Length: 195
Length: 333
Image (cartoon, rainbow over all chains, first blue to last red; front, side):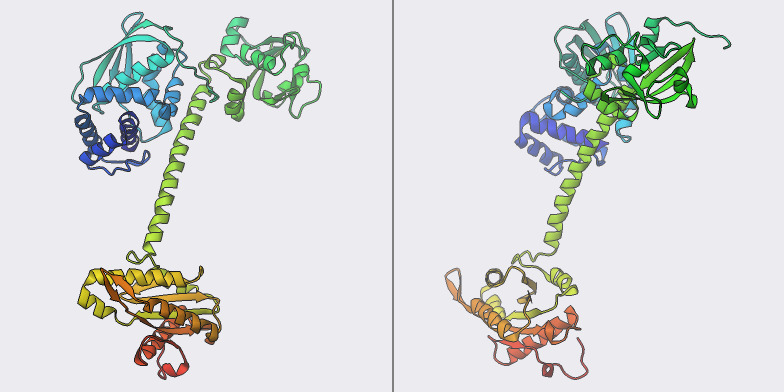
């Protein structure tokens, strides 16, 4: 389901930096400027080309760019559906962390073609967790880091996050330290869509 | 009963947040917290459901007005229950014997999505084993995917319309093309005039001034033909300097001929190309389909073509109506 990922990158560049940046990155990556269809498949290397073109155009470290992408997916108003689907994972951030192990199965339920690497959560202390990301999708660990940061905000939790042991095959670990479950008000979430 | 379990009320409430326990007289003895909230929401200021008769608060579909324990246990205890006076509360349920009475567990059934929205239920209202939250998740995921699909379909449909339009359009003049004409000829209406028109001095312009001048002439002729045609007419460029007009509703030569003459006059008017005055002029052959209703579109076009050559031979700049004498004996087109 590269279309969905490519489309997210397209919207992220367009919404975050403007149409001109998207157009430049698309041209440099050799993809059409009208972009991607979220439900169509594309070759995997297109995603890589697009990301390196975007990083070069914005003169940014690609890890930072991926992390921002993760934050964007959750927090931008245009991507409200993703944020809501993630919020179904739990009633607070701690709950949400435990639900991450189900995330690949949940993603498959929504879109059978969307294959995510396995996710395992290890609790190492009362407020310390490690999320083990399985191999298969290089770059996903950085995206996950940004996504967790934004989800913590969404739940009103205060956390510190760190990325460890990033392997070339995409495997990695995210260290999560939960400082405060209810630091802020967070954003409202109701099961029925009446927000 | 062989064996059994005793379960305390708080534990039962956690296990089944939408349960009812009725005694032998069908009076409510215990009510799960989610069900209690739903009842109170529909009727603020209502009395505690515990201690009230089941039939005061609920209606058993296909059951009597005053429900007894035996009614609930009939049909293996499968139940459809509505809130009494609360039309938006509809449940599926199962009743099992418990002590002298009955234990009922309720769920929303297929109406769960609307129920959760209407009653602002939260995850805490459901037992963790209840798949309602997963169902809501799926519903929302499905909705998001459908929206994407619909958007994709809209974009594809838009592209299709553009592609079809392009496939039927002559890019140089913006007129219809040969393909569009062939499609129109397949379902040619009764009483149509088919006019085949050919420029008289196009080759000279092209040879003397080059292709750019030729293209300019063709585009200008296209504009003039469109300007002189009616809304329902089809104007096509079918190649080189050849044009075809289909004019529906033309069944009389004395009406059609002056119209074609006016069109030829419009084409003949001088045109300017880079300061050079050009006049190409045109000849036309025409046939009215009323002459023989059995002729196909292709046969009409072939006869209009024969009439065009007669017009050219007769000195150009004129329109010739097809007559049977233009058709050599035995030849079919």
